[in-house]
Amino acid sequence: MRRYLAALRGCLLLAAFALSASPVSAQLLAPAEVEEATAAADPFGRETPRTAVTGLIDALAATDYTRASQYLYSSDPEDPGRAEELAEQARQLQAVLDAGGTLLPFSALSNEVTGRLDDGLPPESERVGSFPGEEETPILLERGEGSEGSEIWRVAPETLDAIDAAMSDTEEIPATPIETGRMVGGAPLADWMLLLGIAAGSFVLLWIVSSAILALMRTLLADREKSTVYGLAHAALPPLSLFLAVVGFNLWAGNVEASIVARQTLLRYIGIVAWIALAWFALRLVDALAHLATNRMERQQRRQGASIVALMRRAAKVVLLAVAFVAIFDTFGFDVTAGFAALGIGGLALALGAQKTVENLVGSVTVIADKPVQVGDFCRVGGVVGTVEDIGMRSTRVRTLERTLVTIPNGDFSSREIENYAMRDRFLFDPTIGVEYGISAAKLREGVEIIERILSEHPLVEKEGLRARFAHFGASSLDIEIWSYITVLDYAESRAIRQELLLTIFERLEAAGLSIAFPTQKIHLVRDEEGEHA
Image (cartoon, rainbow, N blue to C red):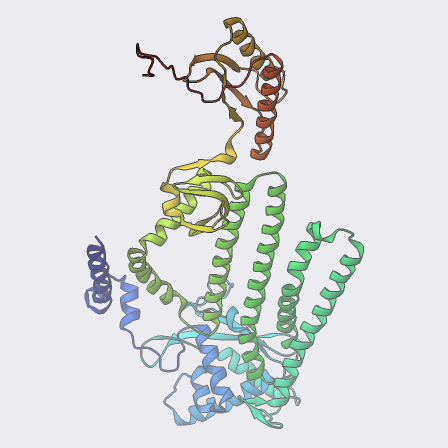
């Protein structure tokens, strides 16, 4: 069977590879997708507003204004005079942006070929920032056809006119970007230090505020360990401080006159910090809520609910981490859509080779939904007897009577015969009492009545169905069978009541002159005629 699965898995992988590499795949695409796939890729990466702005910032950081001019609209890009004019406008664009102009952060820029269609602008226009001034002037990109025949995004003509107007209306903007001090990554070191100082200062300030709030809550709350409000605040405030610091930096960075290269680079990669803060916040909040829910369910003796909470907590963490990783990869510029497509094919192949893992996950859902056992239950699973300590996503752990820990895969666990002793609502009390031979029938009847009276008088013995009956003549005793139930749930308590009943029966029978029999044997000796024993 394994050979067949391995062969099938190999065939699927080969088919997926052949389909992606063969011309047949192009025929299966929609016409628009075929046209996009066959069109030549733009050498400057201007296919989307995000890639256009990113390429422009990279060119400005390298002070390569000739390359930066490729991101500005030109009616005749082949004209040498126009190329020099565009390079000069690229210098002026950087100067205006350094003087207080703003661009949208990397994550806010559209990464679609069509741009945003819900921004109220024409389909071929996209707003990506604004220029400083009394009246905010938008920075627009315009979509048009490039020299290679593909659709590209470039700075719109009206924005280029606004650059000329800004340069002529004010004397505060230098004609070219001013390079002061040491340059690092295309921006002055002082600008990097200023922006990083703002970010660090915001975080330290908010961290101090959150620490003060927690300290105040510890002072005011007498029993903070059981307080829901304190538990949630303790989990949320530290990561929330980091996230609010990132939000504050995004708000303040646009009002700081610093190099657009430094601002845009930090705004791009500080988004990673924001996603880390959100993931940290969500993970701590999930742990706090799971802890509160587990404590409540344990107080209500809902142990199966605690198992469900534990499984949901783990699943939520996996989902949160996956979302955070995808967002971080997207910030670095990886094609997340293509990655998901590859994961789809790889996931199919992986599923074929990981049938046991899938079986165990399905078994986990079965165990939790069917509830044959709960965490804390004493049970027998196959040949394993012990207490359930944990029901996980892959396996269930059972602590045996010898204090060893047995791990059973949930696929196997759900298919075994499970005997749950913790679900028992009463304990059977059915001993057989043997009295000695040599008594009268009336005395034997009295003994039966004594035992039945003891059972009916005890408050923890169920009255319905209890009985004591003379059953049969045993080999060395007259046997009285008892059938009744002890109405307690705890095993140790049931054993104590069982002992109490047996001792009472023994005392009452002894007082009535009835002795408990023990195994005896009579041997009859017969003498023959010569006086010898036979």
